[in-house]
Length: 302
Length: 317
Image (cartoon, rainbow over all chains, first blue to last red; front, side, top):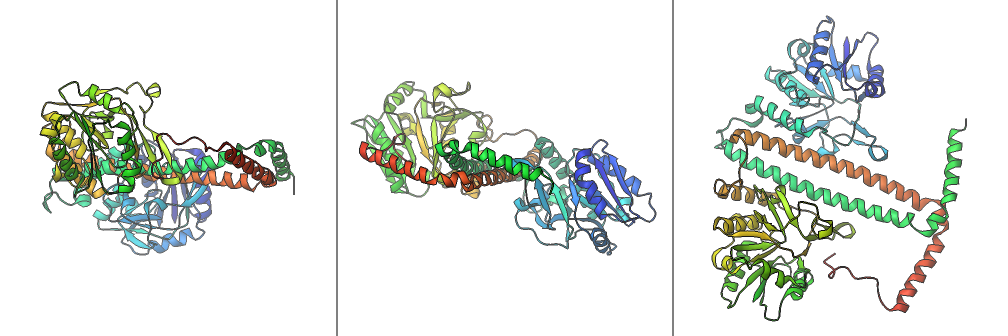
């Protein structure tokens, strides 16, 4: 039996996105654990794992973020296929190899065709992770999967827990996958249909994210960095390099922001040139009338 | 006598930007030392300083980037006023305090009296915060700083005789901070003054990240422990490395978010523009706009003049 779990931090998001997806994907015997979030996501997910671990006939536990919507009609069949290999412990819809930190997307990304839907600026959609460059297609073994959708094998559910000591809301997925791999099991990306409903702001609480980055790096230092001294590098050299790269990234980001602002300004000027003309003002009543007519047509029964 | 120097790699840019500014600012007895660039900017500047050092009666050497235009008619007067203090070694119109690295703008910027004029996306001007004093924020002030932006530097005769740009730092980056640190290490002052310039510059702020990173490390290594704050950071080197790694990744994420945000805003504006231009009313009134445009063009011909010229001459667009 395939169980679904969600730690509900935003009930409205769950109702709009995760719940319809779970309803579409689940089978008649599936258990659905929709629990209110308790403490950090680490603790909430451990509660879901503890509950699912009681199920004797558990085939997989699917951890769904409230903003994730499963859109794949063959979801359960694909989950079973991905878990055919008994060594596979975690499956996701997106992940990466060559991961060096909780910014896993800086590695070699493998991703299903996931949609990113947003409401900002009139709304729209784009290919998820498009900002991280070209992604390789699944299926593929990876080091880490995106925590937005994590499918855990019965072995993982019974043997591995999210590290509540890290507890800052970020990096739970990276840490969990690293634990699984340290235990000799595999992490995979499978071809799963998913829509990600989220803002265009990728990380809202950057300071917390930075702290989480540090904690996970400290915990997995040798796995993520390689031991200091191996190739003649010292912490001082690493520190100087990282500080220089940080400032360079910031300066590059400022430059990119200037480019984008200039592009927006150019379009705003063009739009203003249209909407500030006398003919535009004169024909304003006509446009209002047309809009009212269109609204009426829209509202009338067909 | 106040001398002017510029290291020229693009003569057409020099002609359009630096030269008009020098002509505006120079006095009848000023010596202008335009020089073909030799190797790095530091090497070119050092060659200019060597030439200036031989000039009799030198009051100051003004080093101006080829893409920067001085816009003050009374520039020399302002230079003399600030150099009246014999302890002043170098002067600029953009500076900061609390500087820890060649990314001096991450310090507390005290003065930024310039316009960043860009050519991309149809061109435009970005006036910095103290371009106009009446609109400047409360933290804008003249006086001593840790470092200056190198696009316009005024060197005192003492600096010309005693300080040189460090040619071991690379081709282009960090030379300004290093020069200012040398001046301060010698007990002289680095100060901002009330003159202004236009910097005609791409919107891309770092176009060779590897060279920039190398210069960052070299300057930090050279000055750490010698000047308070420079190259410094909290914690052990391990802690600093882990934090800098995290903050570097955070900077990238901010960049990604901003790009997505901006693309969405562009898409929104493009939709609005398309909708406006596709509306019946806009299409129906097209002849009227055509008529108005023709009428305005005819009016300009009759008056025999164009509309106002851009401030202080156009930069490369």
